[in-house]
Amino acid sequence: MASNNNSNIKVHDLFKVVPPSSTKTTSIPLTFFDIFWLRFHPVERVFFYTLPNSQSHPSFFFQTIVPNLKSSLSLTLQHFLPLAGNIVWPSDSSKPIIQFDPNDGGVSLIIAESDSDFNHVIENSPHEASLSRSFIPHLESSDSFASIMSLQITLFPNSGFSIGISTHHAVLDGKSSTMFVKAWAYLCKKAIEGDESPTLLSEFEPSFNREIIKDPNGNNVMDLVSSLFPSEKGNDRSLKLFPFEPKLKDSVRATFKLKHQDLDKIKQRVLSTWEIFDTKESKPQTLSSFVITCAYSLVCVAKAIHGAHNDKEKFSFVFSVDCRARLEPPIPNNYLGNCVWAYFLDTQPFDFIKEDGVFLVAKSIYEKTKMINEKGFLEGAINDMFDKVISLSSEGFEIMGVAGSHRFGVYEIDFGWGRPEKVEIVSIDRGLTIGLAESKDGGGGIEVGLVLNKPEMDIFSTLFLEGLSNNE
Image 1 (cartoon, helix red, strand yellow):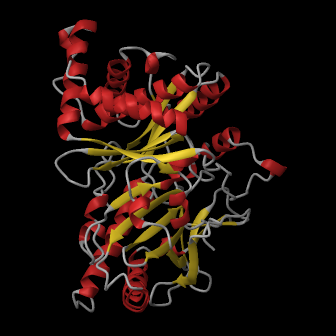
Image 2 (image 1 turned 135 degrees about the vertical axis):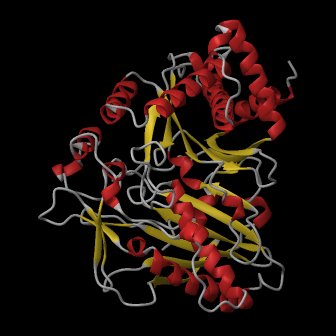
């Protein structure tokens, strides 16, 4: 069933979609990059597409569009076989593995219909945070197994449809899950165009080679995960995902845009301040859109939360870095699995709410990414990460994060009925996280998704928009 009880959703069908040909049981190990996320909440994303009236009529949609999506999904799984399996923990293994069993495999696919107003659902302005959850499927997990992926296709009659995807973070990072959706869209579009046996483009052909990932930490990441998340009932081998419950009560979800000109304006302000605070020798020539977007958005988040709750004044930021090109030797771009690691900023507790917060945070992100680029995957990064989470949490810090990337190209994903009208990372409601995507309109802009309670969102919106209109 869908992971919601909203009356606006009617479930029509539930399938297990399997690869077209029966295959022998296959298994692949989890790397230390994967195991860190073993009991983390799923990554949940939803793509909304508009359709002409004739195609969004229920009879056409369920008889033509759904079969196309379903058959192309099956073909795609042939290339991404492990995704049709589960995470299991064999009794003779010290670590869990990914296993596809043709007798017990397949991806759960819900076919649903919503009577929600499509235009309301996809609007950028704040609306009830719970709404998007209606279009996301539940990802099954228990002590003995965890599903890797589940999908939900939802029709909005006479308007469009959505594709909701929940993925297990221990198997897929953002780059990997996006590659899978792009492969599925490519094969679906080819089928609609009449190509009966399309060949997958090489850029979408996944590599599952785990041999290329070397554990720099002597294989003890399982112990670290256990120390960070002590298991309830003392079951150290449980695969049940921890209940990072979505923050839905009185919360609103919104999307904000930073145009290329906005990013340039903030960048110039930061670089001008840099000259005052620091020597010109250390000032960078430029700053990336990621640095500027995170610094600006997160300072607005921190100031909004502090404005709504005076006692909340200590903030920190953790962000993931794609390590594919940073390892020795580099990992192929089409590696399917986790190849990201999280790093904390070296900021002071109150930097995010200071008057010069955007400069202080941008400088800190720039310096941290520069250090990672120069040194590669940092020595001791694994232990540092776990120690930092525990110490900051115990000191009452609000830990902010980021999901997605403006480099994933999610607005390019066309299943044959045009590009998405809106893409949301729904799972940002499970923590204090901003979701990033490239601007739908192109032009080098970035979209920032956010879930906050209503008073916080009101303050955030004011700060965000006033900062962009400030011409200083």
